[in-house]
Length: 554
Image (tube, rainbow, N blue to C red; front, side, top):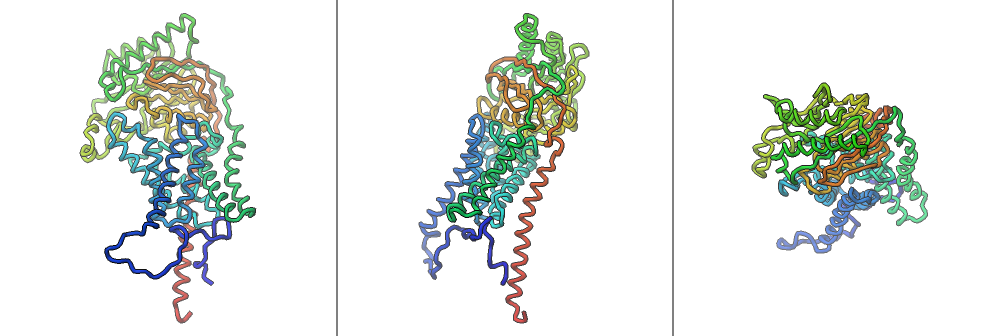
């Protein structure tokens, strides 16, 4: 008998439901030429499938900060699994795209804060289509045994695609970044954000499969075994807890982050570049005065935010003078976020190590340049939809090497704003010797939206992933000091000038995630590819068997 006429149920002996839903008796019918495109019953069934898909996306959005509802993520993915299980690829693509819209439209609404809805809708729609491709893959592998494991690997593959394409990728919205307060977080120290996302997805897909089998076959051993897919990632995360430590391996230092604030919200703050610089100078001098008065501990080094000086201190004598004044007042090395404008070539988003005696010394150029923010791909085409592209008159260019500053004997690695979303940008900095990670950022253009809290959660996950203190100086807030175990020990309010001074541990040990680098992600990609390979092999065998059965000579 040909194997093509049977199909194994996922971890059960029961065949999955047909691709388009419950089987119905087939009877000959003739549809009048002017009849409806689909019976009302079928339209209702379609709506019943679409609504849960969109709801799963909304639940996934609600699992993200500032809400502490991380546990909604596996429930959202369980609901999505119910929508995708056993569907045809086309249906899987459409339903997952709906889920992606329900997820990303509210998650990324801040991208249109000052430039209108067009960029927001375009970005969210493009990313939702990539989630649709992920859903297509999940629908395919749901026909295989052990499908929750394969589906979770496909989910990671979809996130890997979104982190790389198009235009260099946009990793924002990884499931892992919503888990800073969750039980799964220690998995980041084992295999980075890919393993963390895999654990959450496996728990969600396994939950759906366990409920499906238990509902249809109460008491079956298979249901109990399937429940292991829910327990396994939780158990693995608990087992990884010893990797999460904030012990001071190399002693401690006192670090300060400056939040100077901006003159006003929105993109117009760029027109008041000198005022932004002056704000950071004044807050640093005030900190120096507080230290002298005994109101604040003396820092070993200070970090300013990204864009704290949009005036090029190499080309603007006034900017150089006031920065030097502030650094000399505090008397310790300061990392300055500046826009450097060479005579030729692209602009540079640069962190400058400024010594109170030697002045500007080392520099770090941001490597991950934000498309449609710091550079405009296809400028003439994009201008047809939004004239705001011309606010970026000159594109920024990327740096090449990690930046680890020697600040009072401590290795402080620079990961500028958007770069914190990229696994390789953070990991390479730690591998280059960073004992502390600094994420200088500028969120002023996004007002009081949830963007700053989403990014702060991302930084917390990075702290656990590499077991490093993360300093987050932001022009307008929320600035924070994050311990290596992901705890926020101090933070500022939004749009308030402030300075945070804290004693932090220095660490040079490496987590498995730091050592293994991209290997866990590659392994999960191979797992997903293996599932597709099994499906392809089955189809080839089925076609050969069908041809053999039709051959009279056989």
